[in-house]
Amino acid sequence: MAAPWVLFCAVCVLRVVLATVYFQEEFLDGERWRNRWVQSTNDSQFGHFRLSSGKFYGHKEKDKGLQTTQNGRFYAISARFKPFSNKGKTLVIQYTVKHEQKMDCGGGYVKIFPSDVDQKNLSGKSQYYVMFGPDICGFDIKKVHVILHFKNQYHSNKKPIRCKVDGFTHLYTLILRPDLTYEVKIDGQVIESGSIEYDWNLTSLKKMEKSSAESKDWEQEDEDKLQDWEKHFLDASASKPGDWNSELDGDWQAPMLQKPPYQDGLKPEGIDKDVWLHQKMKNTHYLTEYDLSEFENIGAIGLELWQVRSGTIFDNFLITDDEAYAENFGKATWGETKDPEREMDAIQAKEEVRKAREEDEEDLLMGRFDGRENNFRRFHKRDEL
Image 1: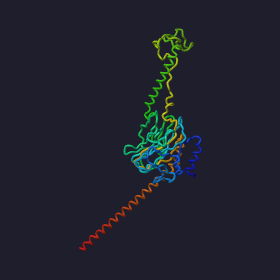
Image 2: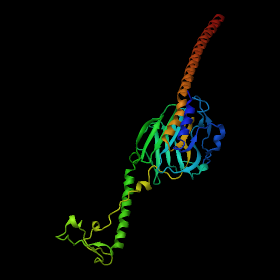
Image 3: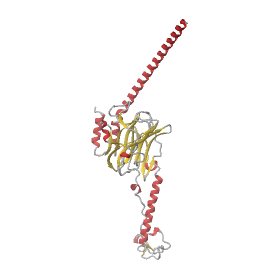
Image 4: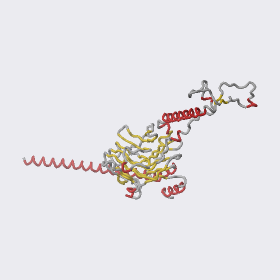
């Protein structure tokens, strides 16, 4: 039977024509990751990353990722790739995150940036397109952020999406489709889905956009009418002749008047917009012009977050336009190491319990011996007295 990785490679070859992989990072080449990722120097107090698979893992090399190393720090690091637009295409953002320290307060999310982001000065003020992933702080905040940048504002998904809070590696996937539907997956399972328009509270914003567009249409239409006022005007007072035969003569239309009686820009009385030959054209392209899930210049991915206790590991980053590719990639990476990781953790836990029990037994024995020794000394002194 072929190894899972071989099967995955075969699937990749078959899908290479269909799938576009914009970014993929597994940290399989050791310290060369430093040539691809740029640590921000915006603040000298920013925490640093190291490459690590943690204290327990499914595969020592495959599970290596970027690990936060300092407590109570902000972190900012990013990697650039060839800029692209996801207009008319599905956008899939996927990665794994492991809160080995069992996060009490801190972020585990990623951000997708425009290509012109200043990597050396990356900070919380850097504009981003998408923010996605878990955020944990105390008992109240245990959520998955899905924030989209639209019309110079950041908009959060209004649905409460709960994240994983244990110390194991989990696979997070965000899918934004051109039909304005989306899915959020954890460990390959859909935990939330719906409409980007409604689940980001953008319905009113789009209505305002639509109303504004229609208003502009009316204004332009009125300008056109004023320009055509001298040319085309229906005689609103005309009536259909009594001998008019609709079956033979067709639908009757009022005759045209060339010069309506008006002066100084005043419209003739009794004239309504509906009598004009041209009909009102509604703007039906406002979604195309301001699509809620389209970003023209995607060019970088980064980690810009705060952690009280360090130890989180980020790995298996993927940005693609193909949902099936992302699913197969997740199975070939996280899917292959998740069970061995839990097995190793269970073995370590049993070993820790065994050692603790032995230490307790040793302490108990030492305590009894100390007691006997004290009794011996007490009786010995009594004899001396």
